Structure formats: C-alpha cells, structure tokens
Length: 413
Image 1: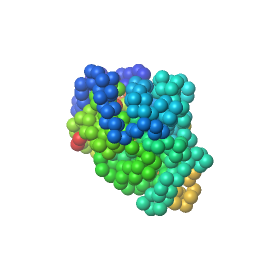
Image 2: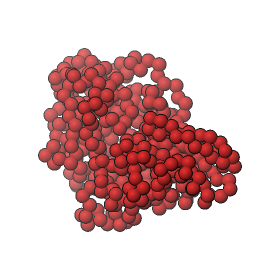
Image 3: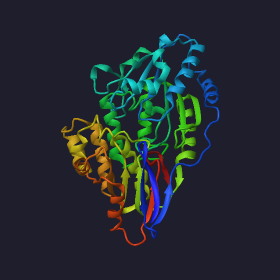
Image 4: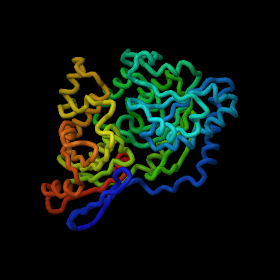
C-alpha cells in the first residue's frame, strides 16, 4: 500500500492506495511567487492613471472572504493611490462583491479588508432586495440589467479580485466582480441559467457567451478599472496588474493558466480530490467537480473530500429539493415559475448534468449523508472507507488521479 494525504480545511487526511493502482498526482504548477508584492502593486497602480480623475467619486468593488485574494494588503495602497490622484477617502465606497453569498461577519470583514474599514464606508449588498437595485440597461433578450444602487452614487468603479479558471465564466475575475458580484437576483439568475442551459462547464474558455454577458453588464454598471492578482496554490501572489478592464483581465488569464493549467491524463477510473481552498460550503466546493470530470471516463468516480463547515449552501437551500432531479425536470420547473431561486436551480442543473456522466462521492463532516443523497451524490464519513469501497468496482489496475486544489485547476488533457 502507498500512503498519500490531501488537504482538508486546516488539516490533512491520510489515505493509502494499492500498489497495483496507476496513480498520478495533479496540483498547481510550481511558479515562483513575487518577491516584492508591495513594489509590484505600486508600479501596477500607475495603470489606472488614465482612468482616475481628481474629485471623482469611486466605488471599489472587492471580492469577499470566499476568495484568497490578499485584499487587506491591496486596499491601503489603492486608497493611497486614489488620494494622490485627487480622490479623498470620503469620496470612496467599498462595495463587497458578495454575489449570492451570505454577508461577511465583522471578524471576516476585518480579516478581508483590514485597515480600509477605518478609512472608507463599506457596503455589503443584498442581491435579493429589490429596493437596493437599479436598472442600468437591458440584456440582449430585453430583460433588465439590475445592479446595486450604490453604483449610481459614484462616477466610476474599480474592481479588486483574483483570476483562476472558473466553470461558469471560463475564468474568474474581470467583469465577474460586477456580475454576479454586485448584481440583482434577476440578472444573476439570467446569467447562471444561460450558462447551465448552454453546457456543463466553460472551464478555461477565455471567450464564451457568459463572459460576453458579464462584460456587457459591467460596462453598463460603470466598471472602468481593475486591480487583479494571481496567486499560487498556497495563496502567494505570482502576478499583479492594474488598468483597463479587458486589458488587465487578459493578462491575468495568461498568468492564471501558467499557474493552474496542468498536464493531466484522461479516461481515468477514479479521481480523489480536495476542495481546498473552496471549503466553506458545497456552493464553493462544487467547483471541484468540473476539472475532475474533464479527466474521468464515462462512469468514472470522483471522491471529493470537503469539510463544508457551513453545509451545502447557506443562501440556496432550495438546491436540496432540486439537484436530485434531471436537468430537464429542473429547467421545466424554472420555466413554469415553480422555482424561487433561479441561481440555485442553475447550479442544480449543472450538478445533475455532471452526475449523469460520472459518479460523485462526498466525504464531509459538514454535509450529512441525507443531504448528499438529496443532491444525487453518495456519501462516506471516512476517506479511506470511501476509497476502499469504490475501488472494488474499478478493476485490478485502476487509473487514479489525486487532485490537489481541485477548484482552481484547469487540466490540459
């Protein structure tokens, strides 16, 4: 037996595989992190020179605690830069790009935004509150583009975030900081349903219809600049850039591929994956499904080790009723107006599509067996037990991958 271990929240789970298994280990590439992050950031901020003007009111839209962006380190330098460009702290709002996530606690705000909390007003938007939304345009199909009304109180917005491969939009970052970051429920729902109806995953596709929609909404909402970072598998910045939205996003995608696009075999029997660093709930951990599915054969098995201390989805409880259905049944319910949460329905459709091709097994302390089965997945309370049980049906020499940082990976099959 050969011993291995996988990150599981703040600890590691040990397990072993039989000698005869054909095993490959997959994780982020070893990329040298920046030696002087502060200096690189200060140089990069000059890219905003043509965007920021004295006296302008500015919204900084920053990602939340579900992302490892070192936002607390970035914001003081960004605020100092804005001051030097003639924008006072009193004319800056910090808008948390919660998307459909729960509000951050005070401790999380302090950890995520640091000393910026003492300098500028912070707003945590509620995407479900229609009184807090404003229409800024129309989708290509004529439906309204609705974003948080804070954006009508400023002249321009600057996004702060990070870029990794992402199953909905190809890559995270860029205009995604607005949609879904600070958009209203109908707009967010339309975007997720578009993605779910088109295909299971746009992972690693830089140009795609969902990104086009995000770009449209962000432009209408006044996003004019970005400060983006790319981090390695340990959360250390490898690149930082600032400037115009499309230019910075494009450069960040190239760097994200350098870190996260990895050589990988295909047609595997079994993938054993860790959801780190997207561990807080299954709503984050499900990002592990898509890179794993890319390298599994039809009928292959994914065993996902994910702690999920906040359960399945704090703000999307309806997924427990929907995800066990077929994609067609879920979509029919949406079209008949029988679903209260279109975003949850969209993800449920995608999980159902994945489940139709591979078997998904959850190993989790935070998700119960009943909840896992409601999602259409199998469940074990122990990783080794899950491996031993699933290997019984996979032949004498199973092809196995151990996938670290699974939510961030882009397999190059």
